[in-house]
Image (cartoon, rainbow, N blue to C red; front, side):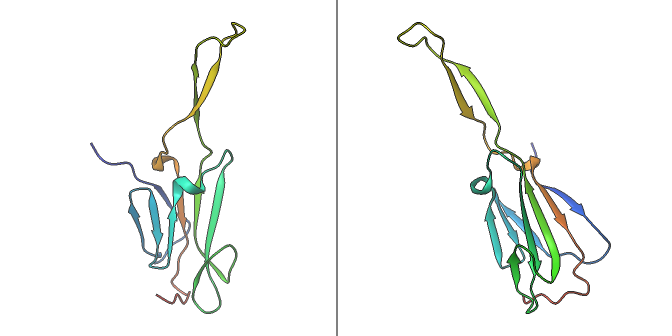
Amino acid sequence: MAKPTIKVVEKNEGRKIGYELEGNTLWIGDAIAMRLPRLQTDDIVKKDICADADGNLVFGLGENYVAQVEIPPKEYEYIEGEADAEGKKTVERVQKDFDISKCTLTLWSIEEVYINE
């Protein structure tokens, strides 16, 4: 069975920055590593990776877009528990395992962008 991988969208034509997955850690170039499960919240999370004026990769806005990572919200399952002291049913919310295949990596061309690698 193939291991899950991140969805990749190429926004435009041209050479893209290299990326690598090590388990649930995403490397962008040789400079930025993101442990994706740590960034996941109850809302969609989008992390922009840009090149600044000196060619360094940075989170947030810079001179040129390089990549964007979209991490979906946490998912939960609800498990019925035993009745409480008053006889009411209890429900426990349990977070599902992180699924990298639900994340999206969007890449922009770096043809005309200086990146200090």
